[in-house]
Length: 451
Ligand SMILES: [Zn+2]
Image (cartoon, rainbow, N blue to C red):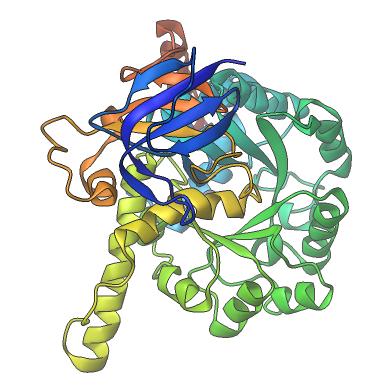
C-alpha cells in the first residue's frame, strides 16, 4: 500500500496522548495513520509539505439531511412549524430517486471540500427502495465516509393509511440494506437507523424501533425538537433497557432536567445544530447542560435548505451560542457578565471531531490523529491574508478559516482534495443536474399548492 509522509505541519491531533506539535510529521500507511511525531523518515513515501499548514482530523458532521442540498436557502426564514409543513408534507413528497441521488452526491462533495470526512446522513425521505438506493449511491460516489441513517418520510396520510407516527421502521428494508454493500466490514458507507422516537411516534412504535436497533446492533438516532408525543416516553424506554450509547438524540433543547439526566446517565449521545435551533425557535442549545452532565456532544449542520453546510461555520456558531448562553444566565443571576468565558475553542473542535466519532461509535477508528486510526485528515493552509500569523492553531482554524483554506483532505488514506481542489470535482453536468432538480421540486411543490 502507498505511504504518504506529511512533513513539518502544525498538528492538532485532538488526542491528548498524542498532543499538539508546532512542527511535526504524520506518516500514512495505506488507509491508516502509522505514526505522528518529530523527524519521521519513510523511505519511498510520497511527501507532502506541511509547512504553513495545520493538520487536524477531518470533521465529523454528526447531523445532516444531505438530500436537501438542491433546496439551498429555501428555509432561511422559516419557523420549525413552517419547515415541517412545507418540507416534509410538501417538498419532500416531490423528490424522485434521481433528486435524492444528485443531492446526496453533490452535498457529500461539498462536505469533503470543506474538510468534513465523515457525515451522519440523516435521510428521512425514503418512500421507496429506489429512493434509498439512489441516496446511498450518491454518498458512495463522493468517496466520503458516512453512516446512512435510514428514516421514514412524513407526508400527510392518504385516506385509509396510518399517520407516520404509527408506522414502525420497515424491518425487511433494514435487513435488505444490511445484506447489501452497507453491511460489508470495510465499507466506507454503513447503516444506522433514523427513528421517530418518543417525540414523533406512539409508544409501541418507539419501542419497536429501538428493539430493532438493539437486535441489529445499529445506531438509532432521533429528533427531539418539541414536546414528546408520549410524555413518559424516555422513562419507558429506559425501563425496557433500550437506551444506551447506540442511542442518539438530536437537538433536545426542550428536554427537562429529569429526562436529560436519564438520557445522559444511560450513555445516550447528543447531536446539536445550534444555528438551526436558534433560527427555528427550539430554545437554548443543550451544550452547557450537557457539559455539566459529562455527556457526549457532537455538532451537525442539519439542513442546507436553511444554512451553510460547512462544519467550520456551524461549530463556530455552536461555540459562541454556548458562551452567550452562559452570559445570559450570569446576567440574570448577578447582573454582571460571567467571570470566565465557558467552553474553549479546543472544546468546540472536540465536538466537531471526537464528539462526532463517539456519536457514530467510531471513536476507535476516526476523530483524532492517533496512530492506528483511519487516515481521515485535513490540512488547512494558514499562509493566506485571512489566517497569518498563527498564534494559536485552534483559534486560527475555528475563527479565521473557511472551506477555501482547506487545502488537502484524506479519507482512509486516499487524497480527496489537493492543492485546494477536489480530485474528483463535480462535472458541469452534475451541477446543472442539482440546479434542475432543486428547481423542479420547488416548482412541483408550488404547483401542488395552487392546484
Ligand atoms: Zn434534523
